[in-house]
Image (cartoon, rainbow, N blue to C red):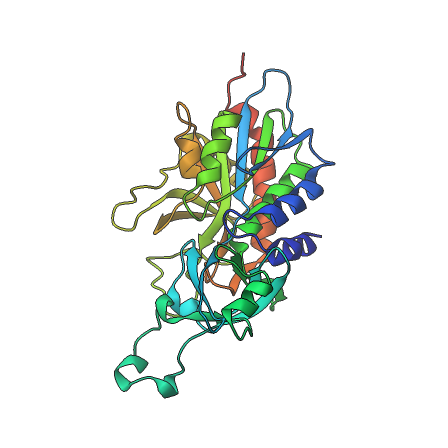
Length: 356
């Protein structure tokens, strides 16, 4: 069941600002398990499981969007120039298969550039940059591409079916953060909390944590937990001191994250939710890892700074090759993340004062 839902989530196409396919899927998955489902004006999906009268509020957030692209310009020959939606490394983009989503149809394409045979010697050794790439959808002219519905602003996503590897490993696009959406969904279906739990499937995390900002203001939680991915470093070429998180060793609990040079702009996790996660894992024999991540952040950063401040933490599923179409994770870590988050929410009333 978990694998089947992950497949549907991963293979949905929902770049930042175009999350409707995942929002619809999450709504359908959760509507019969929660007390309330609503969508705010920005597009966040907010699912509520009510606790007792006057109980505290805990917000759990996972973002629906994946990194994607937008049609920027159509060449007269029908080739498409594109802009990034979210953080890409140019080397991971070249020669990939993509889908261009128009109002008429979804059009397959490939990202191309000048082949090495036709490049001068000095350029062959340099990585190809985005401005030298284009998308080939088989159009012979700008007019033909436009007749198929291609316009400036059409969203573009990678092709990325869920593929099973050995030993419980799976590969696909958009585990960041569809695996977080999976964990959120499975927990909201099974949790029996004494606090009121707000499960938020947020929008536009990859372009600035935008959905987390507005949804947290509306929910006004007493505690928040973002569910995301942690960058694993258990493969060749990675210094373990820089990325010690490993697949199969349990979900990661973030101590701090942010910019590489200072951990600025990110989250220093609050002792309340952080210790609650750690205590719950240790009480129940759930493996976990601690993570200080230099180079990015999550929705928890915006949750923490909402209104008068919210104690916030991050629970993550270790993932290799993040922000590529071939991300890899271990399903055992997903199962343990679901178990840990569920049990943590069922203990949250021990730490939160009742609301008057």
